[in-house]
Length: 536
Image 1 (tube, rainbow, N blue to C red):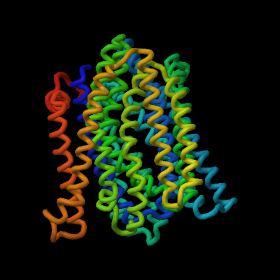
Image 2: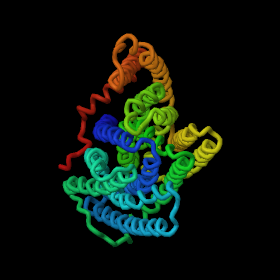
Image 3: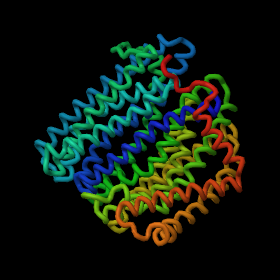
Image 4: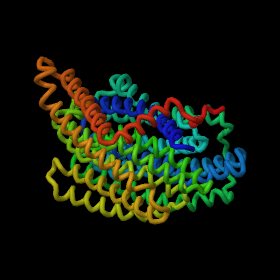
């Protein structure tokens, strides 16, 4: 699969992820207006964190990373029928395990709330978790269906599935909440119910495309399949590493919840903004790379893998470096434009924009991990990312705790952001170094040359964006405008100026890089081979 086909696939995923992120922003705007950065919103985020923990471990994380290479091998060497038998056995095992976890979790939470009577913070979070816990099973089934479709190099339906969650949550906040409750707590409860409904809809949405590829989910309790043991062996170190990572995230969120009522909410709002470009480009590329790298490894084509890695890194940094700089320069105006209305106050904007400013550099580290982790998984080396992540997490956790203890109240959440970014940076750099030592350089001289030119162009862009927003547009272009219209035109105008400056500078100092990216983007519309199959 050549890089132009990867760009085609990434473009398909990026398109649907982009739509999902747009609706995600609208969802967060509804959240901000309805719940702001209140204790209830933070409690909802803490409760929703647990189903997402299972999603990252089993839905799109450890299980998926272990399943795709084995499923791909079975598909190519044994055919569809044998591969589908494997898939149904894994799905049945996952369903049984998560059903038991969900029922036991709901029972334990109910007993705890009835007999212990915890404080308001704990009660709110656990009450909402009790409602949303079964979503863990539903979203993990979605993740497994996604892994099957991605193994067939079909990306459109899986990439569009998350849109449904956002649409259902938006509809609930706009039309259901005003009719069924008068308090923030009642509204949060019905939003939690909407999450469950969305999980059922997402599962049903993927079934028709699975049928087109010939896969029909069936219960299969024969778990003696040697391929299942192979998946579990591959999965165990990944789950350990991701489990440690997710525990770090959970602990960080709980530290934020302990530090201030508003802290988890601000981290969620800021994180969702920074994950817009991350999801559009890094996550979509990472989704494509795992099955692609798996095919390279199956065919013993390590040079092809490294060439694809080189192109992926350069094209990804072409977007992420200026995105990080632009977000840092416009952090406060962006948050004010998107969120500041209803229950989301000026103080909420100040707190959230601080988190966003320090999240932005993490785009580079997050992107680095999205390229190198799939390479290790494709080579069926799931233990190395675990060992690296443990050391990174130790550093991250230490910074989190230090930040919560020693930073002033309104900066405690910033310490958690900084810890996450530094931890991911250590993770990405270490994986890159280990890969290079084992498999050879993916062309670091060319990569670093490209990154240095991009960084120069992004710096020039950042200066231009700052002066456009704060000096040029207000007095010259829009002296009579006020309010949201003024702010929106100023932000969009500054972003447009930044894009133009970056493109011009890159074109001058690195025309080859500019032409390569433009050519790659054109191939999204004119691929040389079908990638995201339609099921035919």
